[in-house]
Length: 161
Image (cartoon, one colour):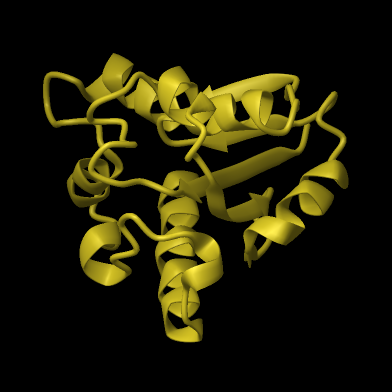
């Protein structure tokens, strides 16, 4: 079974945020926008896509035979797959849920904490590294896209590791 590791980045602001809304409310909000996706098939290279290319990339995968791996997938990425792209993988693998079952008494289960706990590369900081809060994807500069790609790809790589 192929394993597709992915991570979406999306529009967020002081009002449209997972800190103030449930994941479903956030994703269904009229201001919600998928801004990028990084994806890795099995142990292949991690690839980054801007929003216009995401539907075509996802359509190339036979989701009826694929497992989708994501960190906090149940609370974010898997919901985007279903609510935005109408995609339902055969199997869902959520590394945060796995970590809660195994490590919850030893460490927090956010990706940054797990990376540190497991001795992996430190996770990036979206606000500090990219800082596109309250901005639409069409307004990103090429430098911001490059920083978003590094951040997004690193999340996929850490999740896969």
